[in-house]
Amino acid sequence: MATITAIKHKGPQPGFDGMNARVWFYSILLTIQYGSQPLISKRFTGQQVIVTTSVLTCEIVKIACALILMAKNGTLKKLANEWTLIGSLTASGLPAAIYALQNSLLQISYRNLDSLTFSMLNQTKIFFTAFFTYIILRQKQSIQQIGALFLLIMGAVLLSVGEGSSRGSNNSDPDLILFYGIVPVMVASVLSGLASALCQWASQVKRHSSYLMTLEMSVVGCLCLLISTTKSPDGEAIRRYGFFHGWTPLTMIPVAANALGGILVGLVTSHAGGVRKGFVIVSALLVTAMLQFMFEGKAPSLFCLLALPLVVSSISIYQKYPYRVKKKEW
Image 1 (tube, rainbow, N blue to C red):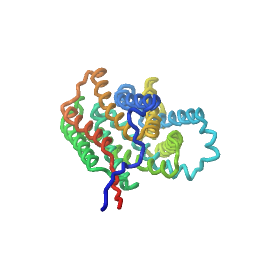
Image 2: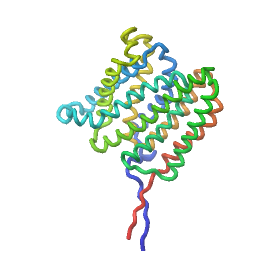
Image 3: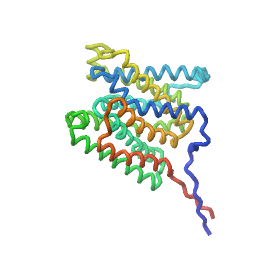
Image 4: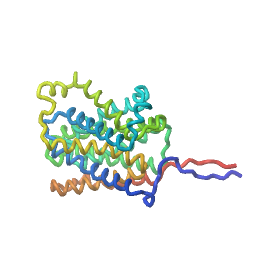
């Protein structure tokens, strides 16, 4: 008679008791960075700053950090013998180009949405990550995960309809909020899901370290941005006003914080897996709400209060109930 046993989907699923101090440190730093990034960007990046210059500088900072960390752990010496251009472009080329466009869209959205609304809309990237990992890697989702993804989309729709139909917390034009706030962050979420699936595929095939992936993707991202400046409005603005138009010394704060977040995402994912990263995302939403109230005196809107439980519940359920492969034993 056949018996059915359940085997958990393979992948890093560490528990809290097994986390070492280093992983805790990375996770706390990423939580703070992720939660504070929207506020930092709005406060220290002026409206006159050209978006491409901010993204390009962030990628350069990432390259410098990755090289320093690789030199420190000794992997930089092996790079000359093991690295190939074809292998690098295969693993990191397309994701890097996608992330470069995504970062530009996020910079636009930061400026036109309140911080908590932005953070919750940005969580829809988990849905698109699940979608593209299924398309590219055939990685299935459990029933609970599918339900959690629908909860997430419900929260995003609630925010989109609510914030887009009102005048928003800053009394801004609804069309401005929709087309320069909501639409860019939603497109960025789709791109983030595609890039994440491609990175997962590359890590399984190429076995690249998180530092090397960061280095390669930042280099390719810089090249894509530089090429785009030949025809884009940002490129014209750079040629007319200069690269650092609108910059102040404080503009480097969100740039450095964003670069640090890019490094930390790779470290948390490689050391702790998706479960810990999910808890980081949930915690970061609470950090955003707390910091927005503390520094801006702005309580969450009614739409945010209604959507927040949906977002938090969906992410928690998604991480708690992974897909299980049923194996028949005769």
